[in-house]
Length: 611
Image (cartoon, rainbow, N blue to C red):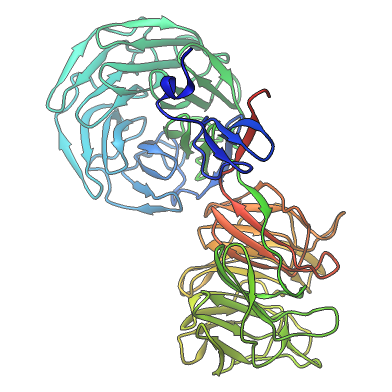
């Protein structure tokens, strides 16, 4: 009888307990529990949409190109529907924000884009107002160049492919057209027509594999779908909801159709094609027609459109199979502490300093190595509700509330061995926010002054002195920060003027603060881990039961999405790390705790072979 080694080329590994680092599906033997086991990644069962950054200019009837939700180019369109204006505007998206770049040479709307990336795209034909265009332009990431025109000018057509291999099909000229043209990188060639002439949407990998989806005929909308094999079109499974003026993304075997006009009104319906059938998915939040979309069934971006006026909003699709993050227990702190422990570092090299224990505000300082907390040299000044930043070897602690009650402006630098007093903040305050990269570069913002008044003050630290810079838009205390002196995020707060906890979020660009989308759960005394465009918010205090929050939310630069909760709800905790490897420690539960939790952006499930 063949042994496992003979079949798979390797023996079954032994492990005393679960095997750390086991590959997906790898069989191993748990010698402690006497079980054969295997593991697999935890992933999302369905795809979801979340808000992304807005276009700089609202428009409909635009086009674009991109391979995923974090790298796009959008161009052309109609700026003020239903007015007859056309646009040459081009914007590039980096996953965080849209930036205006070089315009098309020919302004147009109802154009279509193809391309393998946001730096290599085609803009094909469109409507010039008046008249249809035959113009084709190629984008190289910085400028548009006119190349060979198509044979028959059309608008509202479908297209798919790359800058060297594309297919352009259907549309209106101005009558509904079935014409199909193939691009080989130098010339357009007329090939076999669609079976049904129409304005439509569509996508594909190259000029041998495309989908033509739904669309507008005379009269009405259709649910018809056709597949191109490089020679001819074949009718395949229809979509569930007939529509026109929609957008699509993907390939011939894996595609999305998004929003559009099913008849009267608009739909936010999304359907996914798996190569054999269409299935309803989670809807986009904003119904729209004549929008742009590109990407894949695992990562797409939908942007712009009409509802009924031009909209600037964008939405990001994360398909089924995305990693699922979770919190797991880490090593306990030596001393239970809360009241906003100062914090710095990463998941495997963190500092937790100051705070309060059951009797007083303290100067305690501990370092974490990924498994164990070790007591280090204390702060010079005991304090709670301070702020801090940096790394395990180069950190800063500033502000707070001292032993016996004074509001502090004191500033101390950690050099990896000891704390040294340096130049103070200009304004003494406690329960303030802060962030930075090391002991020579930091930002302090918000807080409460000795008069128990919220402040909007922001100060920059350059390694030798604090300088007042532009204020927050909203004064607050009990806020938290992430990022650097030049690019920061402030999220969560207690706002005295409103008498409430808040999910208020602002972004700092080195010069000024900008209000952004709020946390889904309004709270104060939460912790952040990550950077200004990619971070986690966890814990905090807020309305509802329980008051001590376990909620964790992830920020993508434009919106917050709820992810897995902390095991222990808490406020005034320490936090460190990133969106893939975070750390939460200490805090009020309401009792002060030594508990540490480690966040992993991807997790696995281990199964016994008989499961």
